Image (cartoon, rainbow, N blue to C red):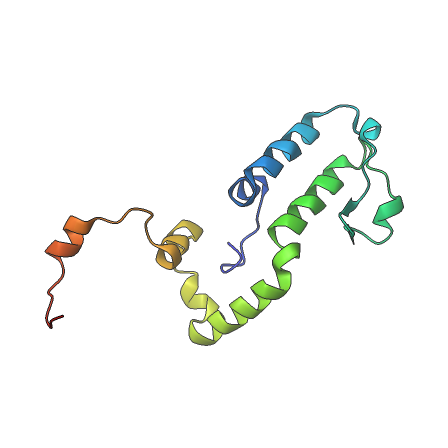
Length: 130
């Protein structure tokens, strides 16, 4: 989705970190967030300026969850992603990539998880020897 400049959502977190996805969904439904003593940080990283002193409450919980999602999906890999996309876009312009949806593009980059050896044999002509 990053390659296509599409927004990411909570379902995308499931693919990155299923356990965190489960915790975020639980926290979203939890009614007394203030009792959990959470602040706007992830480890040493502040999600917003002054995040270490900003307590998560029921009123700001959705902002917190949005920032947690953004950090785990993008922020923690932002520099690496920028370099990857910069290199990719020098070879394949973004307009060309937009011909695909995110699932098709993922398949083009990662292929299938199963290998059909019989299909390989049917579509391969081996020349040479060892």
